[in-house]
Length: 146
Image 1 (cartoon, helix red, strand yellow):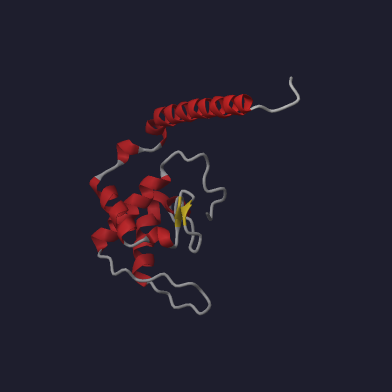
Image 2 (tube, one colour):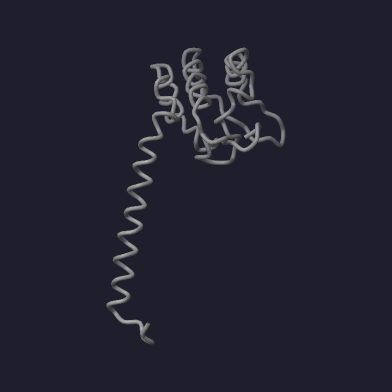
C-alpha cells in the first residue's frame, strides 16, 4: 500500500461504502416488509380500533404516554396495559372506570386530564389498546409495568 492517501482512494471508499450501506438498507427494508404482516396483527383491525387510534391521536395521548416504546415517558407505557389491568376478563371495566375518574387529584402525583369521552369512545380506545397489546413486538416493554 502506498504511503499517501490519494483522492482516488478516498473517492473509492466513499462510493463503495455508499453502495454497501444502500444495499444493506434495501435488504433491511425488504426483510421488514416481509415480516410485518406476520407481526403487526393487521387482520384484527376493526372500525372500533381505527376510531380508537383516531382518539389516541386527537387527544395527543402520546404527548405523555409511550406506546410500544414510542412517545413521551411522562406517563406509563401503554403497550401492555391490556394484560397488566385484567386482560379479557377485566380490562374494559377497569379502563372505563379509570378514564371517568380522571383527574384523581392526588397531591404530589401527575394528573391525567379528563377528556370527557363518552362510553363508545372509551370502548374504542380500549379496543385500540387491546389491539396494540396483541402485536408481536419482541417482548417490549421489558417489564410488566412498562
